[in-house]
Image (tube, rainbow, N blue to C red; front, side):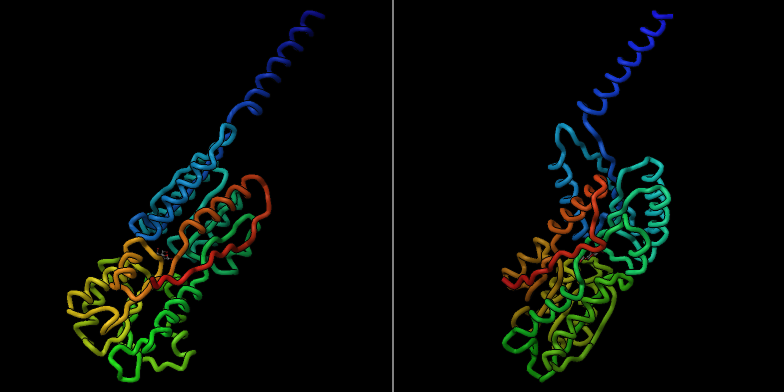
Length: 321
Ligand code: GAL
């Protein structure tokens, strides 16, 4: 009987030691599931690469972040399936760039049932949806600010954007995906900055280009063919579309800074280069580094059980030189 007890004790000690080694001395790995609305998006490519790179810098000999980044291909069903798979794999946290902001509710409900916190990025869910659980946050930027900055870049030109001098700023608006608040607010606030300054405006043309360079080029070419020198300014909700519009402007024999103005948002490298060379009037920095780092920091706070603000906003900045 004594021998049996001694054996049980010895075994218990061995198990305890093994347990300690596993929990104390080893590496703790946290699984992070990321779904990006679509990989084929210029700005979100910069963002996702930075997110991945930043997570890598945070790996230590004690903590590892096992990050899976998936492409939702602009399809909400694909994204829902990715979330289901992350939940089945028991990830520690999810970072979701929604395909549709209205899907936040169903994703939050699933995440809540599995007790897996969510950092929503880039596409802002409604305030109502954000109030549905305390382990969700939104990291982004206030799109109103980016629109206002676009308008102010035009307002602050010596002729206030009236390239042809007819007393009215006649503009073309090339929009992103209109379901996205970034597209809605940039469209509204860029013009508001002009009208607030007492500048007369006229909308000649407004169409969705879904953030896409080829579509931006096509739409700008159509507008230039239709309205010619009546156009003073082409506003694009993002730089990818502005890069396309810049090509169309050159093809139409027009010159930015001389007989037409062009602004975008994001400060993609190619756009900043164009601003420097005069091919674009300006852009607005959408801070992919600041936003991705804030998203990762929030995810890690969730993992560690620390409180996270409901909404984390990173400032935009004007880029004109
Ligand atoms: C915006 C960005 C666009 C596009 C969009 C996707 O913030 O300016 O270029 O990436 O997000 O939701």
